[in-house]
Image (cartoon, rainbow over all chains, first blue to last red):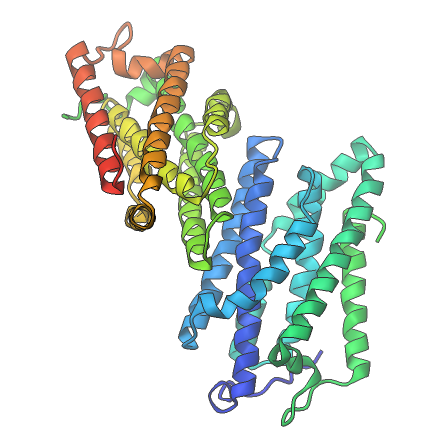
Amino acid sequence: MTEQGPPSSALETDPDYRAAVVDLIAVLAYGELTAFERLAADAAMAPTIDDKAALAGMATAEYRHFLALRDRLAELDVDPQEAMGPFRRAYEEFHAQTRPSDWLEGLVKAYVGDGIGTDFYREIAVYVDDDTRALVDSVCDDMGQSAFIVDRVRSAIQDDPRVGGRLALWGRRLVGEALSQAQRVAAERDALSTLLVGGVDRPGTDLAEIGRMLARLTDNHARRMAALGLAA
Amino acid sequence: MTEQGPPSSALETDPDYRAAVVDLIAVLAYGELTAFERLAADAAMAPTIDDKAALAGMATAEYRHFLALRDRLAELDVDPQEAMGPFRRAYEEFHAQTRPSDWLEGLVKAYVGDGIGTDFYREIAVYVDDDTRALVDSVCDDMGQSAFIVDRVRSAIQDDPRVGGRLALWGRRLVGEALSQAQRVAAERDALSTLLVGGVDRPGTDLAEIGRMLARLTDNHARRMAALGLAA
């Protein structure tokens, strides 16, 4: 991946580019807010107080990311609530379709679902200006939760290998639902999709690069599943 | 209220006092962790993204308080999870008995329920050493959420006055449940209750002062209900 975004000044001079960046930050912001909610709900299923505290800590990290993104929307002179509104339904349907039925499903969702999401946003961030890219990269950083989740899921599978089969299916379902919501968002938000495929005055990436991007996303997903001890 | 706690050195020299302080910090810590969980769950019922973000922000403040209390338990060389364990049931029953059925009930619970809780802990903190009192006071500070809740509840009552009657009943139920769980904790945790009523070598407070304390708690509760526009 080479960085190939426009200069930050394009935010002032190119209204379409600006709309795309606002969409990108808004979709991420609402994602962080729902990630907060979901991790907090998972904390309620935690078997021990330490596990509960660990999940609550991850949730508050997502909330801090949300604040950074919301502040950036305000800096760009848009109303954060209005900017996030169009993405509410996609996230809510995703979460409604992938409600974890227990603690382990919640952990796998946090690891595998957030993983593919942040990978995707980082791929998109290649096509934006440096300031926007730095913000996206910072909120997509792994916050150290991975080691905790990997440990908990692997021990559960060790205790009862049948758990592995169930969670592998769950991981596949998560990715399927994430893809279908991503397609909906891409179809509804032209500005956002032109970041990747280009617009009238702006070259996008070519089909071969999109293919390579999908391959990277798939590889990373398989690596995460393997880290948990699950078949992708 | 005059401050009348023992010196901080009593934590080293008086094992009963130390046990009482550990209980006090642990009951508060678990309370903050469940407050986090509950506010995060209420955020899911928020009518707007801004309201959702506001509740999520309150939840993360509770989590920061939890961390401060947990760190203090570790400093006192106790295992935080073990110290909190005995209080898990009381909080969980309280929350199970007072699950808000909508957004407004959640707000009233956050304001009225947390209010009487923090008032009570601050009353107890009069009887502990300066370091412990400073910690208790800092985590019991109002974090500015009150104005937000008062605004939301009052406008809802203005829009539909019947809401006021329902929420007033709800406020009374919250206090009743909180009292019955507090009584359970007091009955089960001798060390904690001797902070107030005294132990073998340590004078407690007299009955008249306990009466005044209950009057203060009741007055403050009535004041909070009135601030929301509710009959106590």
